[in-house]
Amino acid sequence: LEGPADLIVEVMSSESVGRDRGEKYQEYQAAGVREYWLVDPEAEWAEFYQLGAEGHYRLVQEGGRGRYESREVPGFWLEIEWLWQEPPPAPLRVVAKIAGVPADVLEAFERALRGQTGEERS
Image 1 (cartoon, rainbow, N blue to C red):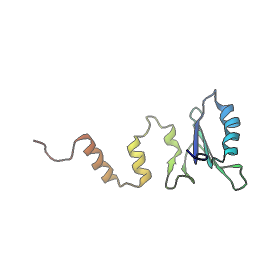
Image 2 (image 1 turned 120 degrees about the vertical axis):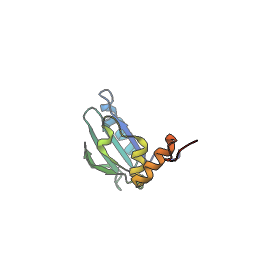
Image 3 (image 1 turned 30 degrees about the vertical axis):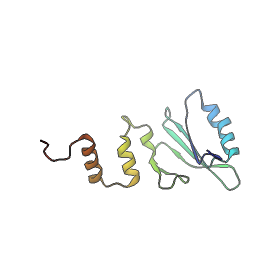
């Protein structure tokens, strides 16, 4: 890795809140990490920061629901509630939704992965 990461995601715990909001926040900002997410699964809350032209983070979105679109990973977005959904959404379905794969194509792909192509096997 050369230079700072484009995106860092911190999943907070009660023991890490101070480090994630304080030390790491300051370190990542000073290093030039362009996008920083703070995810609190206990509170079901996420904060999304982007580095401004002046070199300081600005909060661009926060909450427990809704859609967040990354500025640093073009085409990547997520429904924030996926982070605490029980049971968690299937990774393949999430990736397919983000990529815009039609439902029928996804279903055919899942059947093929399970070995169920819809044709009789002899």
